[in-house]
Length: 244
Image 1: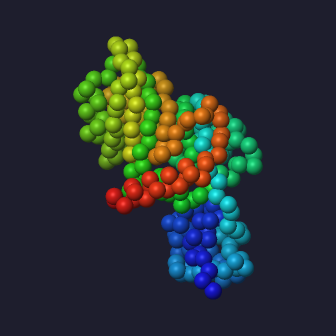
Image 2: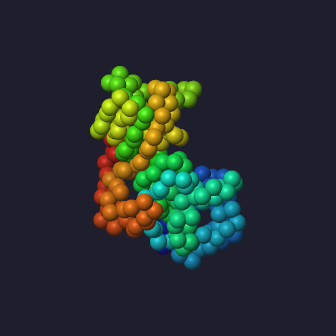
Image 3: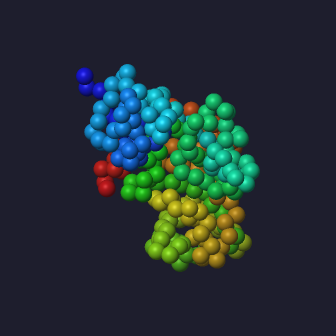
Protein backbone atom coordinates (compact mmCIF):
# COMPACT_ATOMS: atom_id res chain seq x y z
CA UNK A 1 0.00 0.00 0.00
CA UNK A 2 1.49 3.30 -1.12
CA UNK A 3 0.38 5.62 1.68
CA UNK A 4 1.25 9.29 2.20
CA UNK A 5 4.59 10.75 3.20
CA UNK A 6 4.46 11.81 6.83
CA UNK A 7 5.53 15.41 6.18
CA UNK A 8 2.77 15.81 3.57
CA UNK A 9 0.23 14.32 6.00
CA UNK A 10 1.26 16.80 8.72
CA UNK A 11 1.12 19.72 6.28
CA UNK A 12 -2.33 18.63 5.06
CA UNK A 13 -3.60 19.06 8.63
CA UNK A 14 -2.96 22.80 8.30
CA UNK A 15 -0.43 22.72 11.14
CA UNK A 16 2.56 23.90 9.09
CA UNK A 17 4.40 23.57 5.78
CA UNK A 18 6.15 20.37 4.66
CA UNK A 19 9.49 22.03 5.32
CA UNK A 20 8.47 22.77 8.92
CA UNK A 21 6.96 19.27 9.22
CA UNK A 22 10.39 17.80 8.41
CA UNK A 23 11.84 19.78 11.30
CA UNK A 24 9.12 18.50 13.64
CA UNK A 25 9.77 14.90 12.59
CA UNK A 26 13.52 15.22 13.11
CA UNK A 27 13.00 16.83 16.52
CA UNK A 28 11.18 13.72 17.74
CA UNK A 29 7.78 15.24 18.57
CA UNK A 30 5.85 13.16 16.01
CA UNK A 31 4.40 9.73 16.79
CA UNK A 32 2.52 7.29 14.56
CA UNK A 33 0.38 4.66 16.32
CA UNK A 34 2.19 5.43 19.56
CA UNK A 35 5.73 5.11 18.18
CA UNK A 36 8.08 8.06 17.73
CA UNK A 37 9.06 8.58 14.08
CA UNK A 38 12.16 10.56 13.04
CA UNK A 39 12.56 9.16 9.51
CA UNK A 40 11.77 11.84 6.92
CA UNK A 41 10.68 9.36 4.23
CA UNK A 42 8.21 7.58 6.50
CA UNK A 43 4.75 6.95 5.02
CA UNK A 44 1.41 6.66 6.78
CA UNK A 45 -1.84 4.95 5.88
CA UNK A 46 -5.40 6.26 6.26
CA UNK A 47 -6.05 4.34 9.47
CA UNK A 48 -2.81 5.44 11.18
CA UNK A 49 -3.02 7.74 14.20
CA UNK A 50 -0.58 10.63 13.96
CA UNK A 51 0.24 12.88 16.92
CA UNK A 52 2.37 16.05 16.99
CA UNK A 53 3.41 17.29 20.43
CA UNK A 54 0.84 14.97 21.93
CA UNK A 55 -2.06 16.26 19.85
CA UNK A 56 -3.75 14.09 17.25
CA UNK A 57 -3.93 15.60 13.77
CA UNK A 58 -6.07 14.86 10.71
CA UNK A 59 -5.91 16.06 7.09
CA UNK A 60 -8.31 18.93 6.45
CA UNK A 61 -9.73 20.60 3.38
CA UNK A 62 -7.64 23.62 2.44
CA UNK A 63 -9.40 26.98 2.53
CA UNK A 64 -8.29 30.26 0.96
CA UNK A 65 -9.62 33.78 1.57
CA UNK A 66 -8.81 37.37 0.67
CA UNK A 67 -9.24 39.87 3.50
CA UNK A 68 -9.18 43.68 3.25
CA UNK A 69 -7.58 44.75 6.53
CA UNK A 70 -8.65 48.15 7.86
CA UNK A 71 -6.37 50.37 9.95
CA UNK A 72 -6.32 49.92 13.71
CA UNK A 73 -6.04 46.12 13.80
CA UNK A 74 -2.96 43.96 14.27
CA UNK A 75 -2.31 40.84 12.20
CA UNK A 76 -2.34 38.17 14.87
CA UNK A 77 -4.80 35.86 16.61
CA UNK A 78 -4.00 37.09 20.10
CA UNK A 79 -2.42 40.17 21.66
CA UNK A 80 -0.98 40.49 25.15
CA UNK A 81 -1.81 44.21 25.22
CA UNK A 82 -5.48 43.63 24.41
CA UNK A 83 -5.37 45.49 21.10
CA UNK A 84 -7.89 44.74 18.36
CA UNK A 85 -6.82 42.00 15.94
CA UNK A 86 -8.02 41.02 12.47
CA UNK A 87 -9.73 38.02 14.10
CA UNK A 88 -12.17 40.43 15.73
CA UNK A 89 -13.49 41.00 12.20
CA UNK A 90 -13.41 37.38 11.01
CA UNK A 91 -16.16 34.80 11.72
CA UNK A 92 -15.21 32.48 14.57
CA UNK A 93 -15.53 29.38 12.38
CA UNK A 94 -12.59 30.73 10.31
CA UNK A 95 -10.26 31.50 13.23
CA UNK A 96 -8.19 28.42 12.32
CA UNK A 97 -6.94 30.23 9.19
CA UNK A 98 -3.52 31.88 9.33
CA UNK A 99 -2.40 35.11 7.63
CA UNK A 100 0.23 35.05 4.90
CA UNK A 101 2.68 37.64 6.17
CA UNK A 102 1.64 40.69 8.17
CA UNK A 103 0.56 44.30 7.91
CA UNK A 104 1.32 46.60 10.82
CA UNK A 105 -1.46 48.12 12.88
CA UNK A 106 -2.00 51.32 10.87
CA UNK A 107 -1.50 49.74 7.44
CA UNK A 108 -4.44 48.55 5.33
CA UNK A 109 -5.01 46.24 2.43
CA UNK A 110 -4.79 42.67 1.24
CA UNK A 111 -4.09 39.76 3.56
CA UNK A 112 -4.37 36.19 2.32
CA UNK A 113 -5.79 33.80 4.93
CA UNK A 114 -5.42 30.02 4.62
CA UNK A 115 -4.81 26.74 6.44
CA UNK A 116 -2.49 25.56 3.62
CA UNK A 117 0.93 25.51 5.27
CA UNK A 118 2.77 24.77 2.03
CA UNK A 119 1.24 27.78 0.30
CA UNK A 120 2.11 30.04 3.24
CA UNK A 121 5.72 28.85 3.02
CA UNK A 122 5.89 29.39 -0.75
CA UNK A 123 4.49 32.91 -0.46
CA UNK A 124 6.74 33.99 2.41
CA UNK A 125 10.03 32.13 1.90
CA UNK A 126 12.74 34.74 1.20
CA UNK A 127 14.34 32.68 -1.58
CA UNK A 128 11.25 32.92 -3.82
CA UNK A 129 11.03 36.76 -3.98
CA UNK A 130 7.25 37.00 -4.34
CA UNK A 131 6.16 40.49 -5.49
CA UNK A 132 3.91 42.59 -3.25
CA UNK A 133 2.50 45.92 -4.44
CA UNK A 134 1.64 48.83 -2.11
CA UNK A 135 -0.02 52.24 -2.50
CA UNK A 136 1.85 54.67 -0.23
CA UNK A 137 1.65 58.38 0.57
CA UNK A 138 4.34 60.37 2.40
CA UNK A 139 4.67 63.91 3.79
CA UNK A 140 6.96 65.56 1.30
CA UNK A 141 8.29 65.61 -2.22
CA UNK A 142 10.31 62.56 -3.15
CA UNK A 143 13.30 63.11 -5.41
CA UNK A 144 14.77 60.93 -8.13
CA UNK A 145 17.78 60.47 -5.90
CA UNK A 146 15.50 59.08 -3.15
CA UNK A 147 13.91 56.69 -5.66
CA UNK A 148 17.33 55.53 -6.86
CA UNK A 149 18.48 55.03 -3.26
CA UNK A 150 15.47 52.83 -2.48
CA UNK A 151 16.13 50.76 -5.60
CA UNK A 152 19.84 50.32 -4.80
CA UNK A 153 19.07 49.44 -1.17
CA UNK A 154 18.94 50.99 2.30
CA UNK A 155 20.40 49.41 5.41
CA UNK A 156 17.35 49.59 7.71
CA UNK A 157 19.01 47.49 10.41
CA UNK A 158 22.62 46.36 10.96
CA UNK A 159 23.54 44.05 8.05
CA UNK A 160 19.96 44.08 6.74
CA UNK A 161 19.42 45.72 3.35
CA UNK A 162 15.96 46.67 2.09
CA UNK A 163 15.10 47.28 -1.58
CA UNK A 164 12.05 48.77 -3.29
CA UNK A 165 10.85 49.75 -6.77
CA UNK A 166 9.00 53.08 -6.75
CA UNK A 167 6.48 54.42 -9.29
CA UNK A 168 5.34 57.98 -8.48
CA UNK A 169 1.64 58.66 -9.13
CA UNK A 170 1.19 62.17 -7.66
CA UNK A 171 3.71 64.62 -6.28
CA UNK A 172 3.82 68.22 -5.02
CA UNK A 173 5.79 70.10 -2.39
CA UNK A 174 3.70 68.73 0.50
CA UNK A 175 3.14 65.07 -0.33
CA UNK A 176 3.88 62.20 -2.70
CA UNK A 177 1.65 59.29 -3.67
CA UNK A 178 3.32 56.26 -5.21
CA UNK A 179 3.13 52.55 -5.84
CA UNK A 180 5.93 50.50 -4.32
CA UNK A 181 6.89 46.96 -5.27
CA UNK A 182 8.67 44.79 -2.71
CA UNK A 183 10.24 41.38 -3.16
CA UNK A 184 11.18 41.00 0.51
CA UNK A 185 9.14 40.59 3.68
CA UNK A 186 11.08 42.59 6.25
CA UNK A 187 9.32 43.99 9.30
CA UNK A 188 7.93 47.52 8.67
CA UNK A 189 10.20 47.70 5.62
CA UNK A 190 8.55 50.59 3.80
CA UNK A 191 8.17 52.74 6.90
CA UNK A 192 11.80 52.19 7.90
CA UNK A 193 13.07 53.01 4.40
CA UNK A 194 11.22 56.33 4.33
CA UNK A 195 12.26 57.11 7.90
CA UNK A 196 15.87 56.69 6.76
CA UNK A 197 15.21 59.21 3.96
CA UNK A 198 13.58 61.69 6.36
CA UNK A 199 9.93 61.14 5.39
CA UNK A 200 6.87 60.03 7.33
CA UNK A 201 4.49 57.49 5.84
CA UNK A 202 0.93 58.88 5.95
CA UNK A 203 -0.93 55.93 4.43
CA UNK A 204 0.17 52.45 3.42
CA UNK A 205 -2.06 49.92 1.64
CA UNK A 206 -1.12 46.55 0.16
CA UNK A 207 -3.03 46.27 -3.10
CA UNK A 208 -1.58 43.06 -4.53
CA UNK A 209 0.23 39.92 -3.31
CA UNK A 210 1.58 37.74 -6.12
CA UNK A 211 -1.42 37.28 -8.48
CA UNK A 212 -4.10 38.24 -5.94
CA UNK A 213 -5.48 41.75 -5.40
CA UNK A 214 -8.22 43.76 -3.69
CA UNK A 215 -10.69 43.69 -6.60
CA UNK A 216 -14.27 43.51 -5.34
CA UNK A 217 -13.35 44.04 -1.68
CA UNK A 218 -14.25 46.88 0.68
CA UNK A 219 -12.44 47.49 3.97
CA UNK A 220 -13.24 44.68 6.39
CA UNK A 221 -14.48 42.35 3.62
CA UNK A 222 -13.55 38.66 3.59
CA UNK A 223 -14.14 36.60 0.44
CA UNK A 224 -13.19 33.05 -0.63
CA UNK A 225 -10.53 32.77 -3.31
CA UNK A 226 -11.82 30.89 -6.35
CA UNK A 227 -10.17 27.57 -7.33
CA UNK A 228 -9.09 29.05 -10.68
CA UNK A 229 -7.34 31.89 -8.84
CA UNK A 230 -5.50 29.38 -6.64
CA UNK A 231 -4.45 27.46 -9.76
CA UNK A 232 -3.12 30.68 -11.34
CA UNK A 233 -1.32 31.54 -8.10
CA UNK A 234 0.36 28.12 -7.91
CA UNK A 235 1.43 28.33 -11.56
CA UNK A 236 2.92 31.76 -10.89
CA UNK A 237 4.80 30.52 -7.81
CA UNK A 238 6.10 27.50 -9.74
CA UNK A 239 7.49 29.83 -12.41
CA UNK A 240 9.18 31.95 -9.75
CA UNK A 241 10.65 28.88 -8.05
CA UNK A 242 12.08 27.64 -11.36
CA UNK A 243 14.06 30.89 -11.70
CA UNK A 244 15.88 30.45 -8.36
